[in-house]
Length: 254
Length: 274
Image 1 (cartoon, rainbow over the protein chains, first blue to last red):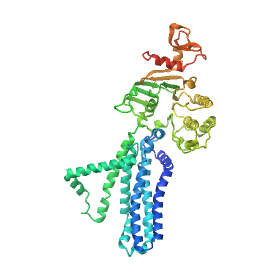
Image 2 (image 1 turned 180 degrees about the horizontal axis):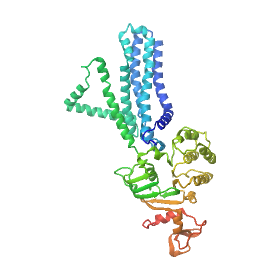
Image 3 (image 1 turned 90 degrees about the vertical axis):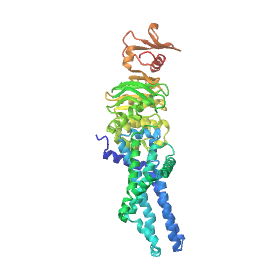
Image 4 (image 1 turned 135 degrees about the vertical axis):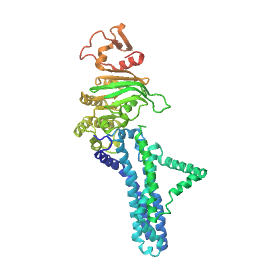
């Protein structure tokens, strides 16, 4: 028997985890897409002047890209909550699957599937809506045309996906560390780290400059710099995910 | 099957030891009763056996593996029935279909037989059941998993009298030469005729770990007949009863273990080597 990873056991577990979390995942994504789509349809039918239509489209786009991380991050911050309560943790920890299978199953749902579905949902509800309904405006407002066109570029999609995955992996780490109020405590922890780094940047400006130049892609061609800009978020995802795994693999019953 | 070597355990580095210098060697073919006062570490012992907690010092082996690694090959041969059980919003039949497949010897038909015996509705959501019904449903699932080690924490708490009888019968059926069952309980009378081994925990350590046969060879339980050989006695309405050292072989079929008396005897003389 493979004690580290068995595909058969993993897919069985993944199916159970998906079914167990189906309601909350459905509600979260439903709220997100419903809200964006509803707001768009309402605006499109109520607002008559093209200028306002274009403006509203951009406003909703901004709201959408703020709401999406909020909802998915909130869900990710509870991804391992069941392991933090004695009653729910006992059957989960006693389930005959390896630690890696238990971690990967939830990781796949919250770090890959959830961001992917919510971004695709956003595209369907916002960008595709703009592409279909506002096509008569895009010629008049080239900025709007660029926003919509840019949105469909693979590098932009990938960049959005990676950004969401960074915050998701951060909140997943928070969910493994904090037993109570993981969402708020993760935000506070990030805020705390940010303050520490800000102070550090003031005290040691050389380090800050070195970091800035390391991530300065302006000297490269546009495509190369876009692709290279995906490296820092990818590194952050790896760091947060590894920290979450290390913590999870050493977890005991609370 | 289970081996503890000089095990110490505390929940944090700064807190007091819950278990100290525990040495234990339990083999298959027995149903052990784990007895001890509240908060003495019975549940903790179960958590160390299953790897839900990691020992602070010493070593534990369960089915030849380090339990804290929680490898599937160990977990699929061990089942822990906790005292408080989470009730998911699904029926026990659905629960069995979902989770039973992780246990190689799980039997769906056995689950249905047990549920019928316990008079539990197989399609009622667990979350809408009473505590007793829910416990019986989960107990049926535990027995249907047919694992080599079965650990039960206060299984008879909240069960009605007929259910306790059914539980005892099913557990007796389950007892084979390949299986080890440990039951932690305060309801000693519920299990007196079922268990064939006793573990008594007190003051962070194991005061006694012995088989019922060996105890009956060593002690006479009941009315005091020879005051010179009294190990422990208590006054009851029927006169003095207690524990006395044996000078003759126990009569087969008549001698019975009195767990309450045994427990009181052990607790009253902790310095004795039991």
